[in-house]
Image (cartoon, rainbow, N blue to C red):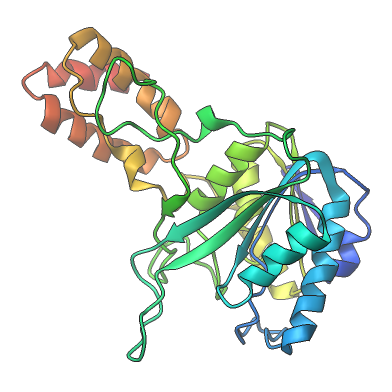
Length: 310
């Protein structure tokens, strides 16, 4: 076990290592388990028989329920072939409460010539209690498309269809792992369903995206990984300097239309970076370009000055 910046990295089999975690000690679980699609994870093969895979899933999900706090939440990535079975295990066998079925839409995916190419993954959100669970809506709102005085200036609910680009192989933040997930995707789930210093678990931590995000937004991450090579990869990733997360919902960069009142506009723009771009410094210039394009005739230079002074 390694401890890096309040992040705990455990090397070993997920089901075995989960048994060492105390009951109800985890506030949030976000995980991307094997989909049983014959992916090559170097030392393990993702190719169980159908019933073997479901039994494997039952075992780790049962342990996750045990370690999850009474007010805790689970987010589980899952491929199309097995997601309905995982849903049934969570709801009917383990007695957890369904909250949301999230669709992660991406613009590039697996190419097919017979049938339609997949362009999304699904994420199941379940809670341990039907009514008592953390959900910080203000932490994950997105900017409004149009400003209206009756709207909440803080932004809108992002909904259950999320568009984040894959971490492509040409990306500087791409690591040698076949199923690396975008940091912005994890950022949204962790901000929504946990608070500062909460314990967040990923029993299949892979390339370490969960721990990297927890490191930057002050959560206590726990990651379990069976492959020693990936464990070493995660250690290096956690030691690297941080310049912003590797992905963002493009809506976060938009400035609302119809901010025609000078005072309201300046107030809004001064707050936008804190609300929406706090962990995405590379997106600030694009946002400011949008501001200046829309409000050039309304003292864009003053907007720029006020923004930079934050």
